[in-house]
Length: 339
Image (cartoon, rainbow, N blue to C red; front, side, top):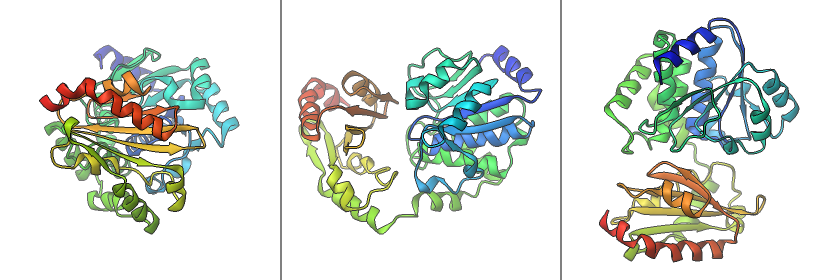
């Protein structure tokens, strides 16, 4: 971020403001961790600040400090729109295009508030007055840490802020195993632990809260795993009926695609999940090395993300979506086998 931008923002935040912080639709650990971490920081300067999420998120994120204060736009629309209309500043975190907020997009686009983007995804839109965009960063939570540090306020990161930021970095790096985890990331994590983040407790809260039904659904998922060795690709399907059979709850399929990617000699993995309510197939893509699932998803499945982790969707049924996916792979055979 430019030094002048930091100077401007620091001046902007010196007096109390009405502030809204927004994550993307279907927020994950990084989205909730970054918004709550920033929320708790801004409260220290007596701003009127609220986090408004486009919709609900998994229960395994609801233990986080101040999570109970988050408004959900889809069920608290009137209150949310009032806050957006009154806001002087709107921070958008962990996304870089307003359409990633779903039904919130019109209200955000219409707002005359100063918009500040903090995000690590590729190809950002230019809706924000101030943009902190860095695709090399492990997570938006790591960026919020650096943002606070650039404001010369690292000393204001307390145990609750540290807990939120640690959570997002941990989840977005796959517990620090993805290539985006740098030496700097580990230094940030070390400082967050020093400031009070209880790393073992956070890991247990996120990963060790499986229900019986979720483990049964995982068994079903693994039984649906298919391998295409000539493309070094594996994919998984889950139908709406299969989700219903195991009493699916939001977040239950989190991380399932990584099982496909863990197979020996596989560098490209996908999971296709039927969502009859939205009448779409939700797609999560993962890769190893330089094969860009961001470019693949943008080109074929109306999505995007990072080089090694992206999402997308399909408006055709599950079988047609799989047929399309398989039909595309020959065009990438050389890239997949040269990786």
